[in-house]
Image (cartoon, rainbow, N blue to C red; front, side, top):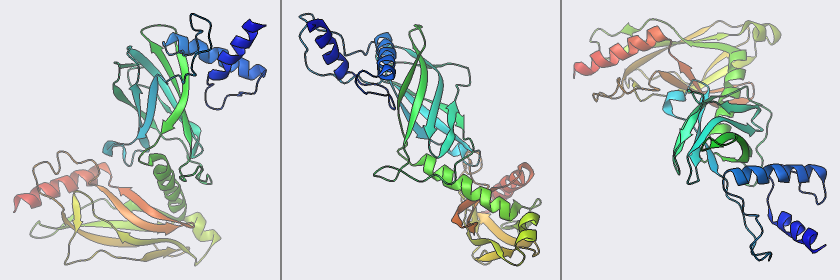
Length: 327
């Protein structure tokens, strides 16, 4: 009897993974607890072993072997991709072959798989795994006291070539990447349903080569035009500059332009100049040809980024290089 009581006290001090059933005596709780203890023992983190003198001892809180942070690099803007930063919190070498982040904003799950199949993590070191964003849930509402949607992660890992284990733990998003990308993708979806928004091919250079004209085309979608003739579909409130391109003060960019259902396409000429002329402007550019538009469409407002196609991007790089060389 005493032995059973001791076991109960030990089990009561052990945590189950997030979302586990902790009801006393529950079959699911017992199964989850046994699975978690086995994984904890594998990675050397079990704090639930019985002391040598069989005394209960102080309560323990096992530490997760890894942490997962959501981030995004400049390389991934406009690519519908993010980074999952995994940090090894143990003193042992670790290999991670899969990270799945679950969020109400992306109900399909965000899956990161290392490029080489396995990511080797030295002790106490962080490394990043790229992950493509799935389709967002545009009706998902933020939860929690801070208004940030909660998310957790499932990490498939091996410690020093031992048996593979799966760890469930919170995934942190300190920069609000998931809410921001969800809002961007949902805005892009409603904007695309309202109108085709493209940067026209072909750059028109000024005679002195110091400025050029980029044309932004807004074409009402045919389906929306047929269903709601005459109604406003999309409003471009303003066009923003980029690290590479800036507005020519002598020719201000258009503001508050609306396209209507059944109406004609609207072309906005944008005269641009180089935003910077340091030697690394073009060589290190990541988002200089992603033009940010502040728009309203389908009841949503926000910033929509329109990318130049490869041909126009190359022309813009050549323009900036040439214009900057003129001093």
